[in-house]
Image (cartoon, rainbow, N blue to C red; front, top):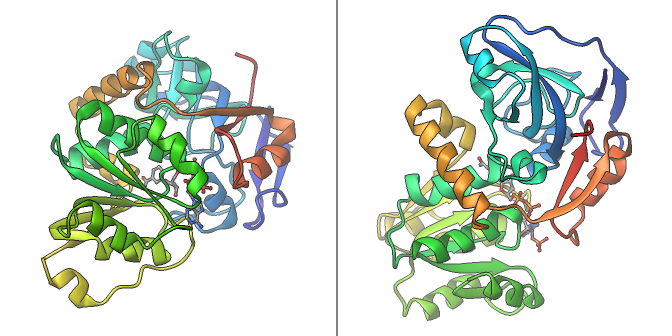
Length: 330
Ligand SMILES: NC(=O)c1ccc[n+]([C@@H]2O[C@H](COP(=O)([O-])OP(=O)(O)OC[C@H]3O[C@@H](n4cnc5c(N)ncnc54)[C@H](OP(=O)(O)O)[C@@H]3O)[C@@H](O)[C@H]2O)c1
C-alpha cells in the first residue's frame, strides 16, 4: 500500500515522499481502516514543519483526521464498526496512507447524511468551535465573543454557532473586503486590521466595557491586542499560532480586572472526558454539521499523488475552502 512519509521536517511541499509499505494487521481492540479522504489542516502543515506541539520521531506519516471504511478488526468494539464509514479521530498513525490501524474507539461511525468531505472534517474544527464556546467558556446567549482568524474554516463555524445559539461575535479579519462575507453568515461586528486598532474598535462596540470572552488563533500583535480588549474577569482561550509570533503583555494587563489567558488544545481536553461526554459531543456535531452550522467550506480535492499541489494550495492565503487529499476511491 502507498503512504505519504515525512522523513525530515521542513517545507511541506519538499520533505514528503510517497513510499510503499506492507499492509498492517489489526490487533485486539483495533481496526484496519481503508482511508478515503483527509483534509489538509494548519496543524498538518505545522507538524511537517516541525513546529507542532507533539513531534514524534521520524519517519512518520502526517494527517490528523479523515474518513474511511473499516475493513477488518478484532474485539467487540471493532465488530460494532465493521464495514462502516467512520471518522478517524484522535492521535496515532497519520491518515495520509491507504490503510491505517487505529484503536476501535477512535473510529466514529458517520451518518449517511454527511458527505465524505463533511465526514473527513467531522472532528477537529467542529469540536474545537463547539467545545471552546460551549464547554470551556460557556458563553451565555447575549454574551459577546471576540475572535481572530475569523475568515478561516473554524472562525466561520464560530460565527454560525453564535448566530444559532444566540451569542454575539466580534470578528477580526486582515482585509476589509473579507467583512461582507462574514456579515452574510451572521457576524455581528467585523474589525479589519487594515482599517483600525483592535482594542479601540472593541471598546467602541462594547461602550468601553470590553469583551468577557475571546478566542485567539493568531498570537503576536493580534492576540496581544485582544488581551487588552478583555472586560473585567474576561477570559481568552489561545488555540493557535498562525502568525508564528509570541503574545506580549505586561503582568498588569491581566492583573487589573483579574483577566484570564488560557491555552486550549482539543486532544488535551478530550483526554479528560468520559465516554458519555464524547458520545454526546459526536451526536451534537453530526446535527450541527448537517444543519450547516459547523460545516467546513469545501475546497479542492487532490489525489494523493498530487500531494505537493495540495500542500501548496492549503498553505496559500487566497485559498477558497478546505483542501482535501483523496487517498482511495469511496
Ligand atoms: N487548539 C486546537 O485544538 C485546535 C483545533 C483545531 C484548529 N486549531 C487551529 O485553528 C486555526 C484555524 O484553523 P482553520 O482550519 O480554520 O484554518 P484555515 O481555514 O486555514 O484558516 C486560517 C485562518 O488564519 C488566518 N491567518 C493565517 N495567517 C495569519 C496571520 N499571519 N495573521 C493573521 N491571521 C492569519 C487566515 O486569515 P486569511 O483568511 O486572511 O488568510 C484564516 O482566517 C489554526 O491555527 C489551527 O491550528 C487549533
